[in-house]
Length: 51
Image 1 (cartoon, rainbow, N blue to C red):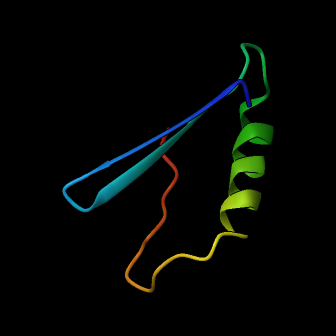
Image 2 (image 1 turned 30 degrees about the vertical axis):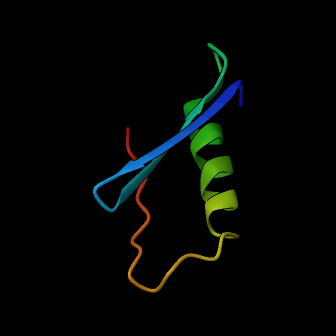
């Protein structure tokens, strides 16, 4: 990833992972999911991937 940004407000949190131009999107999404599955989140959390 070229850049990772995160912010939260009103109880919602967002993490943006920005890859270099030309990176295969399917590969990038699978890498993000791989790391997301390793994170311990609160029970009420529902992680989702955006476009």
